[in-house]
Structures are given as C-alpha cells and as structure tokens.
Image (cartoon, rainbow, N blue to C red; front, side, top):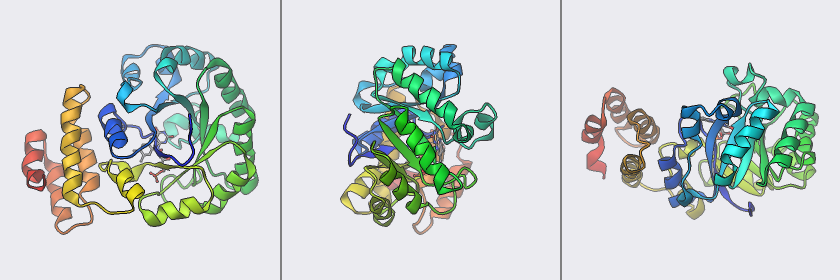
Length: 299
Ligand SMILES: Cc1cc2nc3c(=O)[nH]c(=O)nc-3n(C[C@H](O)[C@H](O)[C@H](O)COP(=O)(O)O)c2cc1C
C-alpha cells in the first residue's frame, strides 16, 4: 500500500460508520479507517463489536484500528478481520480513562517494552501492513523513543497526533516534535492534528511528514478532503447536500442512526449568519422529519 502524499480519515469512535467513510472516500479521502475496536470484545465475537468491524469493498483502501493488550485476543481478532482490511492500526494514543484503565491506548506510551511486544506480535501474525498511532510525549527523548520502537517492531508506518495525552484534544499542535519524529525514523509518517484548512495543512506539510490525517474537520463535512486538495472553501448548501446523501446511504446500507445525523449536522452548521439558531433548532429535533423541516431549504 502506497501511503505517500495521501489524505487519511482519522479513526473516530461514534463517527466513522460505513456511510460516512464512503462519503469521505467519494469526496477525496484516499484512505479511511474504522473507529477503535476492542480486541477483547472482537475475540469474543461480541455482536455490536463485529458490526463496528463491518466494511464494504467500495470504501477500500481501509484500515481497522484495534486496541487492547492481550496477545491471544489480537490473534483471534486478526483471524476474524484481516481479510477485509488493507492494514491494521494499533491504538497507542487514546486518552479516554476507560481505555487507559485497562492499560490500553495511551497507557501503553509509558510501556515501551509492551509496545514492542504487541506490535511485533501483530506484525508476525498478520499478512497485512501494521501501523501504530501515537501521541507526543512530555519530552522529546520519550517521543523519539516511542517512534523508534514502533519502527523497530517492524510496523510499516507511524501515525502521530501532535499533542500530549494531557492536552487531550485541545491546545497547540507541536509541529517541531512531529518534524523530529520524521527526521528520526525511516518508515513513512502520517501527521495528524488540527488539519482543517490550507493554512493548517501547510503547517503540517512543513514538518516533512509523508501523509496527512484529518479528524474533526471531517465531522459533518466529508467535503473537507475536496476543500483541502483543491484549496477552496465550499458553500454550506453543498455540505448540507452531503448530509442528505449520508442519510440516504445510511438507510440503504442499514447503518442509519438519527442521533449521529444530528451530531454531524450540528458540527457543520457553523460560521454563517444565523448558524446559532439553526443549531438550537437541530438540537431540539427528535427525528428525521423535524430535522428535514429545519434545513431542507439549503438543499
Ligand atoms: C469523536 C472523536 C472520536 C475519536 N476516536 C478515536 C479513535 O477511535 N481512535 C483514535 O486513535 N483516535 C480517535 N480520536 C482522535 C482522532 O483520530 C485524532 O487523532 C484527533 O481528533 C486529532 O485530529 P483532528 O485535530 O484532525 O481532529 C477521536 C477523536 C474524536 C473527535
């Protein structure tokens, strides 16, 4: 899989259903990903978890993101999912307390030996390329150490969200640290964090990373990939049309969820005159019919 100069859709729990991923692919994402999926639950054949791991061939190339620490659970999970995905990413950066409490996600950043064991095991037990998604550590030495360990474990590439665990999802992206990572490893590096327009994309490009990963800017706006690639800002009515497409597609492939449609539309109804009032009304809407009445004149 060539991952140079590509735009990735970031893994996002509660957001990346199949309809959303298909629209991101249609509007310019080169590679999409599932949300993080627990290997413990997957290896037990948990029904809801198996649903999260469903995919369709039209969205390829697609990576599945796994989290957990048990090697036996990784082995079983790989057997279940690997034929359907183009790569497997290991979550080493999730700061959610319920994930960290199990020793997974960003809790692993403090255990380099475990990272090595885990990624090496997945590499040995899978035919597909493996990546690791990490965060910046509190100091450069540890950041570089983690990145090198991912490389030494024979991962095919590295994804870096340019914030520390303590920063969560706010505060500045540390472009200097991303640049240092890129200078210190020879596997491709995917830069992630706050890419939302030409200016922020340019800042990420300056770090020298090979590819770019977009998360929140895509929520409600799969057209962000077109905007970034073509360096233009699209009108709100075009974005609303894509929300209708999302609704239709969700119905067609049986993954429609009104609350998710509502969540995505709240994210996109911003930065235009009257947006606050639209958001207030959308928040109060109870079903598709209510929602449609509020925004159908845009489409
Ligand atoms: C709603 C939401 C869910 C997320 N879920 C995941 C996840 O499942 N796995 C993961 O590695 N990161 C997850 N993230 C983090 C994103 O993948 C990404 O690293 C982060 O949002 C920074 O990129 P951005 O500034 O482009 O949003 C999530 C972020 C958001 C906002």
